[in-house]
Length: 172
Length: 166
Image (cartoon, rainbow over all chains, first blue to last red; front, side, top):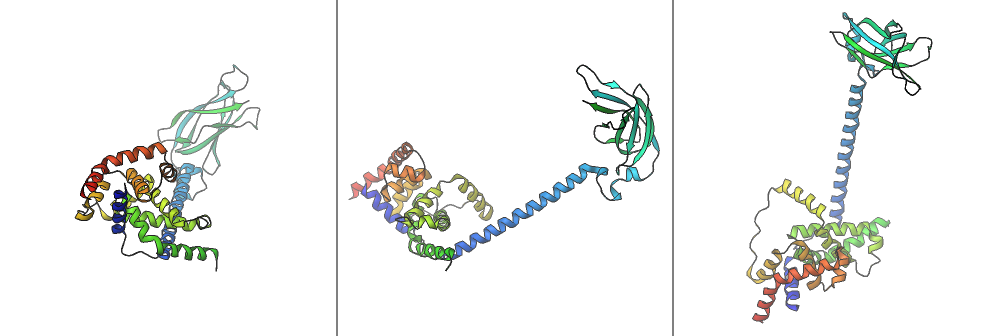
């Protein structure tokens, strides 16, 4: 066994480096690495935040409080196209299915301005014409001016018009 | 003098005294001397970070040596550095052939994986027992024994040849 120890010791001696760096150099090098690492991290963070904001703005679409460039579809007057749909009351007591109700449906532009409103009969059906664009569609049920009814998500009205817009009034 | 500069002076002294010796020892278990130097340097930086603790030890040099030997088998570190080296230098070149006077032991070590080299160096050169090695490398004592046993089969012919020559 001692042979191995001697051999290893001799080999270790042979493997010793001729020159060593200064410890201060190592510390300085590590500080530099850390700083550049932090800088890279900050850059990534800024990119992530900027990218995230851009994504959020995209998701908000015309409804976000953006410059006029973002909602030409509504701002620029275009030909009105027919849109139809139904107003339903959903929820309520157990066993009560969706029920057509009367009321008023409002088509709001990106700024929240009501572009047009239409009265809905007791059968819940409505039809109207609006310019092509993206709308937020809300409704007021008859006899309940504070009731909140809304179509899910933005309603995008294409040039071909749109049918089957569903506006639901949720009651507990 | 601030605490930090006291520590950095103390570690710098230790570094000057022990660096070459530690690299020689760790290089036995490493793939290359460059790798050994890298581990020893990293271990010294760790010693600096924990100087409050390390300075209280009987031998800070042993602490650094243990950390450097342990770093050799740190997989995440090896993968990271392997990638860095590849990006910086391209694929590895063939190492020059060892010279005749140390050819046997160097060749024997080259044939072992890093885990076996670690235990061979710690056992045969540093004289540590199985339990101590297990503790230092944070592996099971049984693993140390089996690695030593496999290493002996590689070193065995060398041992016999050596005793034959003497």
